Length: 248
Image (cartoon, one colour):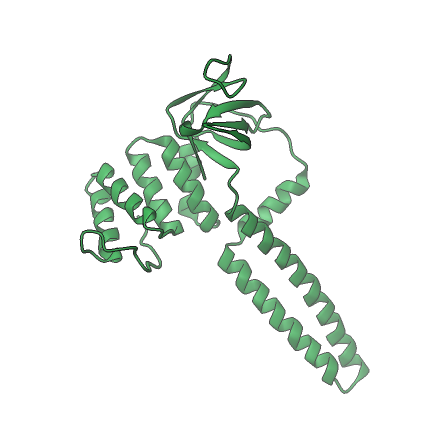
C-alpha cells in the first residue's frame, strides 16, 4: 500500500474526520481484508474532487483484491497517467492485464509512434515541467553570456548554447503538450461489466458484433445517447452500451 503524497482540501468534512484520517481508515480497512469498505472510502475521497496517483493505485489494489478486474485496470490506468514511472503501478497493471479473458492482438504501428509514446510516458507532468524550467534558465544564461562575452570564441560557444537550449526547450514543450493531451483524453475506456455484448448499430435490437469481457481497453470514436462507438486495438469496430464501460 502507498500513502498519498499530498492530501489537500476535502470538500466538506466526512464523518468529522480529516482527509488524512479518512484515508488512513480506508487503508486500515484494506489491510484488514475489508475491501468493500476500503473501496467505498477511497471512492468517497475521489467524489470530493481530490485525486492523486497514489489514491488511484490504492483503489486499484482494493478492486483487485475484491475480484473486480475491470475496475482494478481502470484505476491502475488512471494511476499510470499520473505516475508513469512507478514500478508498483506498472507491475500491478501488467499482472492484472494477464487476467483479462479476451486476447486482442494490436495492429502493427509505425515505430515513430511507439518511440513518441515511450518518451511521453517516461516523464511525469511535474518532471517535464521542471525540466522545461531548467532548460529555459540555462538558455537565458547562455543568452546573457552571448551578449556579455568579451571574445569571439566565447560568443560563439554561447551562441551554440542558446541554439541547443532553444531546440531542447521546443522538444520539451512538445512532450509537455503531449503529456497534457494524454491527461485530458476522454476517448479511452475500460470495459467494467463482466460481459458486454457489442452491437453493429446503437440499438439493443441490432445484431450482435462480438462479446467483450471485463478489463478490455476500447477507443471511443463516436457517441449516441446511451451508446459508444468503439474501436479495439485489433481494428474491430462496434457499438457498446455506455454503462458497461468507463472512461479512464
